[in-house]
Amino acid sequence: MGKSESPPEDLVSVLRTTKNRLAYLSQNDWALIIDKAKRVRFSKNETLIQQGKQTKVVYLLAKGRVNIDVSRSRVAQIGPGEVCGEMAFLEDSLASATAIADEATEAYAIEWPALESLFELFPHLASRFYRSLAVNLSRRLREQISSRQGQK
Image (cartoon, rainbow, N blue to C red):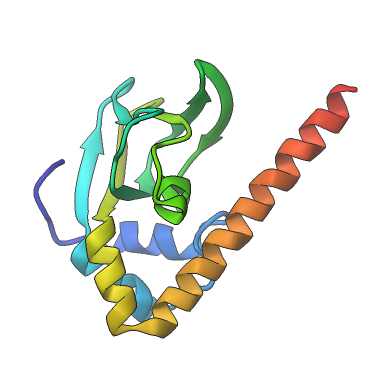
């Protein structure tokens, strides 16, 4: 992972305002998270997360697109404002998918222990973070169901 850098305001704005973002986080929540995260860059075809591996990092995408593959089959593509690595975080498990940059990508990487310590200090942040993840995972499930119904 790259070194910490001060986040440019435009990237923080993307994280706070895009359609598929962590919608329930406040501006202060974002400031707390970004303060503990490292800004990282990935080249096209670079792997962020490898299926079946332990990552211990959640990525908040700021720029670029990332392909999500399960057993070498594309299941989704995510972009700015979206999260990857959250399922392994929620389940404290190995990664369920591989995430590969489809183009030059910038993200904020926050390690699980840093996120968990923030949640201990700021329980309301934890509540809003988990609610945001739940809504995102529900949306993704609905999209998967809808696309499968369209294939029949």
